[in-house]
Amino acid sequence: MICIFLGAPGSGKGTQAKRVCASRGMKYIGTGEILRENVSSGTELGKRVKATLEAGHLVDDATMIEIIEEKIKNENSFLMDGFPRTVLQAEALENLFGKYEKSLDAVIFLDVSASEVTKRILGRFSCSSCGKDYNVHINDIKDERCPDCGDALLQRSDDTKDTVIERIEEYSRKTAPLKEFYEKKNILINVCGTGSVDDIFKRITEALDNKN
Ligand code: AMP
Image (cartoon, rainbow, N blue to C red):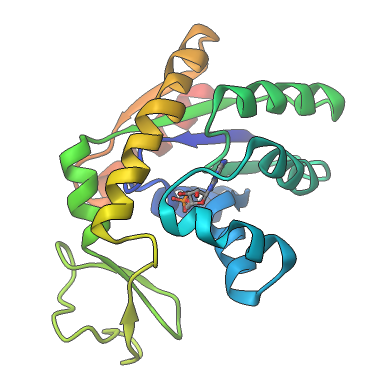
């Protein structure tokens, strides 16, 4: 199966996408995660995109399309989280699917309001050593220590108030039009993204099962 997860920053795409991949044996391709890994290991790409990520802007389309081509060309069952993010990226993805003879099965749109995503982003933390994700609105992490391993919890460097506002504006300007793009192709599945992580996962699982 080949899937795209669409939704505002903070809508829960990453959390849900990883669960879906684990339960269906699909490869997780998260472009934000790929870029952050490059920034933290100081690669040429990382150096080039660091300031863009910190400002909450989008990395240029050509760079992103090049990254995604490498990631998907030898995969047959995968889920993309964070790509495409512009209509140009979506069109390029269609060309790549043609080139490598693949076809898209579903686009899941996680529907969450702008005020809710802002609250979620500003409350999220991850463990500096085991990598587990937490949110102050769900987990008891007041001492900013990982409940599992006790190490320090950190916030993403682009999860600050100013950057969040910019990321949500970038989303509305450039990514939100993708909803209509995929709606017209009859491939978009709207999933309510509020409620517990388990409930949202159930809704997504049902939606994907009904596709088969
Ligand atoms: P995310 O983890 O998906 O919220 O992505 C974090 C940041 O990575 C975004 O704010 C962008 O700066 C960059 N990024 C990730 N995916 C893309 C993409 N498809 N196009 C452009 N920039 C991206």
